[in-house]
Image 1 (cartoon, rainbow, N blue to C red):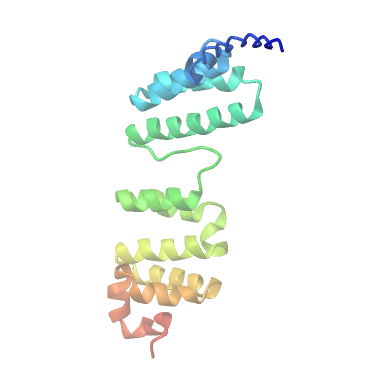
Image 2 (cartoon, helix red, strand yellow):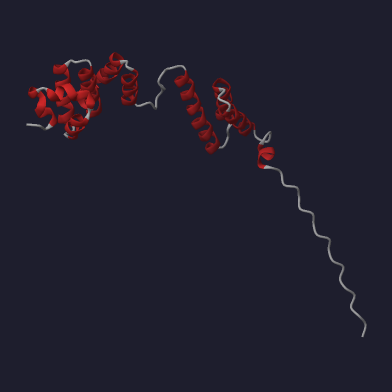
Length: 185
């Protein structure tokens, strides 16, 4: 019987060289390139350069997820720039309550109180009423502190408990006339 010829084996196909993800993306999409360079600038804390590149990425991005990610990094970059300048982050997303707390913690009580009063916030929002009471207490204006704390407790009775444990109201707690504000008799 004749022997069967062995089939010639096919040479294994060479795998195509795989490009690294960064070399694949760099240059292929200018928005990705701008985002990559912007992130590098963020990492090196070069805020102005990072902001410029991230704005470019936002403007050039054609994919919504890329645009949103670039916007997030841009917002963080702008916030870092403002913090380094010694200013609170301002913008449409900043909570005025947080701005007021920031000013109070910096010792800028007048600005914090002004933020609390804007638009009658201290009469409508328990957080602003409580913060205003705290500021008045720190400035030893006991009557104003008592009125603001009464309003804060009216808006949310839990504020009595918070005030009882808050060192800002230590002097007010000592005064027998205001003990009821803290739920004491």
